Image 1: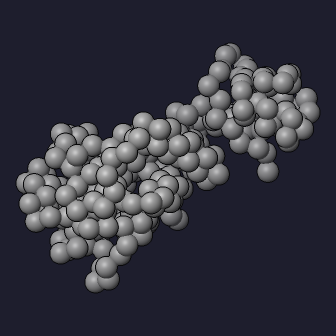
Image 2: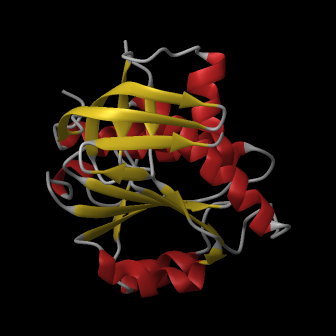
Image 3: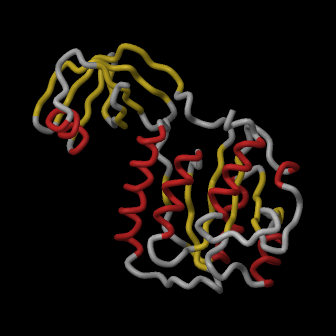
Length: 239
């Protein structure tokens, strides 16, 4: 199977990788002129490309074919996730990107165990994890991990979506009634401590639909994957 890379430099009939990816392809994988790889432009298109030039920090290609990435879902899911402790957010990011999320937006709420600390540095790592997950899973875009905000700021972003789903331990409407292919959908899940009644009331008052994920209590790192997988399945994205 051809190697897969996200490239930022494209021109008519050609493209190039620079830096670490070029080093990996040219030095680690020992690519040869004429060898074919898959390049992604980050906007949902894949390119079959043949190596034409190999330098220490740069590899150039001739474009052979351009096509839409078949791995990109038609339904755009954004995950709002309560900031968890330890390295759980890394797992959530990885699995959410693999499942097809287009954006991950952490937030701090009343019962979060973790507290803000060096978030600028962490965000660089989080986006690197998202990029690696996108490459591994064959995505055609690079999902973005945003800087965390306070939960009170979330309603300001609801206007970006056709539907906002709020996973609440007290349940709500069935998920299957609220998702359909082609929509822009936000999914909100909590941190270890869940949501306060006031936070839940504010989210629903702002237009979020409360939903349940079954009678079992899911861990904060399990709920995002469960919600996204179920929603993807109902939209036909896992067929």
